[in-house]
Image 1: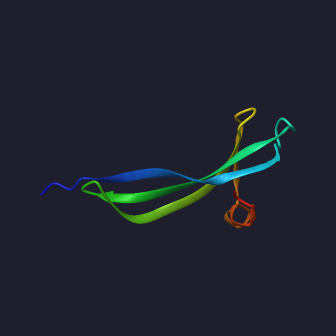
Image 2: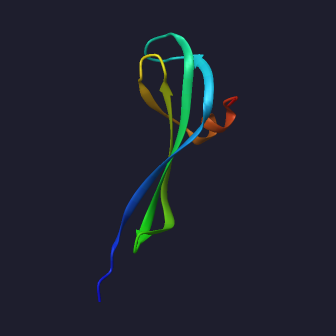
Amino acid sequence: MLFIFGLRTRVIRAGVVTAVCRHCGNRAAQVISRRVTKFTLFFVPLIPVRTRYAQQCSFCGTEYPVSADEARRLPVG
């Protein structure tokens, strides 16, 4: 019997917030994204393995991790 399994990561754009970038110091739009990695069996996503949040500056392109609590507290609009 053959089993096809693996991991698949899906990036979901949670929103955009205007804030000061930690890297370049400019006030610009920051894109908040959520990355969910799921275990797949026969190409069907079944079990979430890991969820990470990231914030990316639209001015310089720097992306840095954000905690789940901080991502939920940001005024996304």
